[in-house]
Image 1 (cartoon, protein in one colour):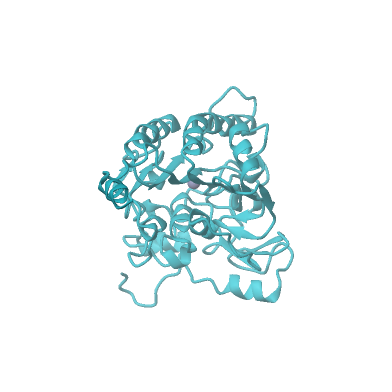
Image 2 (image 1 turned 60 degrees about the horizontal axis):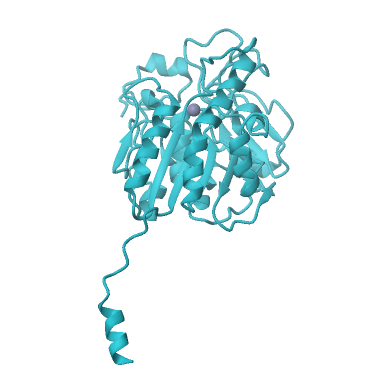
Amino acid sequence: MLIVLALACSRPPASPPASAPITALITIDTWRADHLSPERTPRLWALAEQGVRYDNAWSPIGLTSPAHATMLSGLPPWEHGLRANNHHGYSLSPEVPLIHETLGLPAAAFVSAFPAGPEGGLRRGFSLFDGPESGERPGSVAVERAQAWLPTQASPAFLWVHLFEPHGPYQGDGATEAARYAEEVRLADTLLAPLLDELVRRGSRIVVAADHGEILDEEPCGLQHDRSSAEPVLHVPLFTWAPGLEPEVVHDLVGLSDVPALLRGERPAPRSVWLAESGLCEPSCAPGCAPPGLSGRDRVAIDGGGRWTHRPGRGSWAEGQPDPAGRALAEGLPPVPVPQGEAPEEAAVLGYVLPEEPSRR
Ligand SMILES: [Zn+2]
């Protein structure tokens, strides 16, 4: 018996598995909640049906960089510091830990557009960050490079893949912008299918989300998301899949701040209110694209029943009334600071809150 035990102990350690499970975050830019469906996204819908889908999930802002920082940090923009897209000079607070850092896993990112790129701090903690230096690139590139990276991972690792197809300008054969937008969403679904198949085969934990949605024809200035706080922009698809997860549709009020919890395999606690803000109206805003007298950003409070309201920068609540607590929270959101390098007159046009001191950071 002792001899057998000694022999057993002298065996070399088992070789690592050839396909370790991956913790994967898949983000699809500008993907509306009503475009996660069997018809529009058959592969993603099939995975969502086998996992836990959150049909009352919200983004904190219709801007790519801040929304992705929220998914990676679990904090809203006014807490993680990246209040606009990278080209506006904001950056992620270095004191805010990101999910892959707290998981302690080697991490790789394959992104498809510059606003999801390294500027602003989004590359922190990634040993491999692969994305375009400017503009965008086809989602097929990010998917193919992620698929080439997967076989090199013999141990658990973190993967972020970002697709940009549904972001304008839309391409396709459809007769309308809405039809072409739907075609781009369908293309993202098609491109992701082989990667999702491989992640499932490995028994990975997968979280799928959009950073924000898109205005199609709901507002005078359609085909945009950066200036709006409307439901089509802030309501986003969100679901998770992992081996053994009991399929479920959850109606709790949740948001992109809950993505880190999902990546840890935890169930988010339902919220009583979700807070959000609009992006900003740059000087190039066409007439009718923003509320008159826009100063800063819309503040948004969404209550537990999914009812949404908003308050333009000046004036009262424009749609409905949130409960007093939600209203107080939304009105108390920290103002948007002047970004570094912004001329005062430009900042005033943009609606930033100018500091009292003449010298700015
Ligand atoms: Zn985006």
